[in-house]
Structures are given as structure tokens and as C-alpha cells.
Length: 589
Ligand code: GLC
Image (cartoon, rainbow, N blue to C red; front, side, top):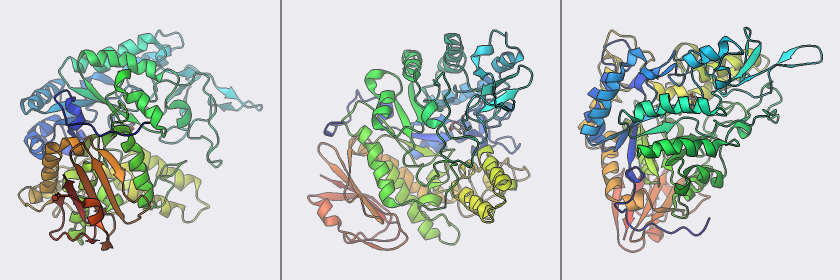
């Protein structure tokens, strides 16, 4: 990549999404309007004024389609229908109109690597080998050992554990599922299947006026057709992670250009989920403007920090270093430094991640409220000062925290990924006495469940998420009487008020916040992260203390010239020290 050049000012030809802040909603856990314990579309519509008041430009709604909910709606049984507990297609239409009335845009989640096994297409496909839809999914014969034992077609492990192949007794073949057994992979090789996907999952909703899609697992649609075995990463497992084989496959860009043609007709923006793609040149293939595939992608370099390589949760809590984190930031920021025609995103949380205060700050809002609040604001400054389109996940704006570590996993956790892992350790690591305790600690730190707990609206029972007498689908965090929207909404020093101000300041200085060129000032510092963002006429200096201790710094050198403080989370601002979890953003002219 050539020498980065700062972009001039944000011009009117800049697409809306480059400088946007987008708020992600997880329908099950946002707001329940009818007392059945699960969130719904009328609940979301009722909170749109709140969302607008944050100062965001758009919402991204996680899947609200009809689904048996094995994977919280990422297993879709009908693209053109809505999961009944969430509401109806008419409710989505109302939501689209209500967003647009408020000047906000709306993205839906596009899940087209797989469907539910309850989708009519799969039911047909599995009904017989001669069904016209048989090849809409990926079926393969068994392999047999010398002793006649039946084996799956290869050794691939599904993302959620176990083989990626499921035997179908009726038709005597295996089907591929890169995720749960109930999520068979669609066969993108057939143009007939792709046309059906475009018509049902894509255009049905574009015609209703949505502004774009978050595109699920966007790099997995094209599989290597010889389905080779994956290299053995962990010999104790009978199935091996095979991301390097099925991510970024041979025809992926052809497929995405085809999809891109449709999206461009509607002027729709897209943000693809791009896991397991470490090489920047490969990322650029997806988002280079001239390729006309996707507007931007989520790169996982940053949020994947501290995860295990084989089994994701085989890791110890807090095994990340600041130098590693900053290297990951530098790598992903390189895509948006003006040296490429690509674009990217900045985010710390989503529905697949634990809460950022629990991973990188202090999450004890009850006994250490000050540290918690400072760290939530410091992390907000961190993520919002990076270039790219900013995504904020529901609850992040009030500093929501992971579930307490003593919650019973079998009782309170709902995510199949967490539970599969937990049960795997329980069954297969009996001879390792510490294994279960380590698994519990890792899940308490990193499980997807933490981001999926009900939104904490107020201090009434069930945090105002649902009625007092209802049983929420997932347990509400015990800290809700202290940590909730209502307590923060009118308090000028709250995390929520800070986010509002931050988003206002980001928008007012978009050229340097969203499009500035990132430079780390001291990549090896393990306590304090000071970085610069350069635009043509100005630069930001962002100083962040990632520790709970006071740290000595020398900011005078970086500041030079005339500067003003745009945001900070402590009153005093000496240039030679940062207090615990202190953060400051300076604008240097
Ligand atoms: C994506 C989603 C995740 C889901 C998976 C399978 O990673 O974000 O929640 O489980 O795809 O669809």
C-alpha cells in the first residue's frame, strides 16, 4: 500500500455511510411491548425517539425473520415472514417508515450462507435425491474406513462444534452445515439457487425501502468443491477448524459482484461480516470501491483478541496485551487511511461479543462505579476516534456489563455456541480436573450471551425491559437498579450523556474522526495508548489509559501548536499524567 494521504474535507459526494454512526438492535433483548418476555418490533418502534436522541444515523436490526431460533434467528425458515413473537411484516414496514420520518436509515441482516433446516427449500431438498431442489444445498456421500465405519466427507469442524456434516438417514448422504446442524449451507454454485436467494431474501426487503444490509458470514458462500481435509490444528479433536478452506473461496467475488448489481439498483449500502481474513489485500478485494461488491466489512482483528485458535473459548481471561491490541488497530486502520479505495468499520461490541467494559475496562458498576464509568467513557472515546463507519451496540451507550461470573451457565446461558463448548468440556475433558473451571471462567469473560441480555431501561422489576410479572427470555443483569437508561438520561456526567456528546463531536469533525489517517505514537507501550489522527488541516491526539492505575505520560510533545480538548473523562488535565482509565481527545490545529 502506498503512502497514506489525508482526505481533504468531507465533501457532499461522500456517501452517507462513511461518516455515519449506526446503532445495532438485537430484537429479542431490546424492548418487550406485550409482556411475553421477549423483545419485539413495536417495542423497538416505541424507542426510536431514544435512539434518535443518541445522534445516530441509522439502525441495524438483527434477524427478525421467521425462524425456529436455534441460533437466535440466524436460522431462517422464511425470508419473507417475521418471527411471530417479534411481530409482522407490517410492523417492519412501520419501523422502516418511522426511521425514515426521523431522518434515520435502516439496515436488515442478510443471512444467506445457510437457511434453517425448516425452510421449505431444505425440506424439499432433503425429501429425496431426485427432488429438483436437492442441489440447492450441499450433499455428499459418506467415506468409509477399511473396517466399514461411516465417516463424514471430510474432517471440517462446524463453528459451533462437532462435524460440519450431518448424516441424513432417509437419503443416505451428508449435508454441510458450517454452523449448527439446523443451519444447512446453501449451494451457491447453482445460479437457480442464487436467483431464489436474491428474490426472496434480498429484493423482497429492498422493495420495502430499507437502506441496506449487514451481510452475515459474507466470505463463506463459495466452497472449494473438492472439500479437502483441513490441517490438524488440535489433534485431540476429531474435527478441525477449516476456516482457511471455506472462507474467501474460489468464486466468492463473482457471487458478490452479482449480488452487488442488485444492491446498486436500490442504492443500498452493505456491511459484510468478514471473519478469518488476516491479509489486508484480501479484505480490500471485498470493499474496494471499483470492485462494486460491498460498502465495508467488519474485520475481527480487534475483537478477536484473546480468543483461542482451535476451540475459540480455550483461553484464559484477560490474556491480551495493549501492544497486541494496538497492532490490530493499526492493521485495520490501514484500510481507511486514504491509501486505498476501500472502507471499513470501527466497533467494539455486537451480539457475538462480550461487553467491552468487561473485556477492556472495569465492569463493576455497583462497587466501583467511578472506575466503571471512567472506563466506559474511555472505551467510547477509543472506538469513536478510529476511522471508518462507527457501530454502537445496544446497551454499550450505557456501559452494560457481562453477566456476573457466578451465574449458572447451564441455567442462565442460552447461546448454543456457549452451551456446546461447555458440554464438550464437561464430557471430553473429564480427566483434566481444572478444565471445567477454566471453561466457566472463559465463558464468563467472552461468551456471546453477555451481549444478548435484556436492555436495562430503568430500575423497575426486569429493568423495564418487559412487564414485572413476565419471565424474560434471558435473565436480566443484577446490576440494573444502578445501571440503566433512566438513571443516565438526565445526568450530564453519565456514560449515556458522554456518548451523545461524543457522537455530536464526531459528526462535527468527521473529516478527522471518521476519515483521518491513524498513527500510533508508541506501539510498545503496554499501559497507555496515545495515537494521532491526521486530516488536512487538523489532527486529533487521543490519549487513553487502559489501566486502573495512574500512568505517567508526555503529551506536550504530541500536542505542539494550538490545541483544544474536545472530550475528556476527568476534570483536571495535566499533560504529564493520566488517571485510571482516563481518556482525552485533543484537536490540534
Ligand atoms: C454470524 C452471526 C452469528 C451467527 C452466525 C451464523 O456470525 O453474527 O450470530 O451465529 O453468523 O449465522
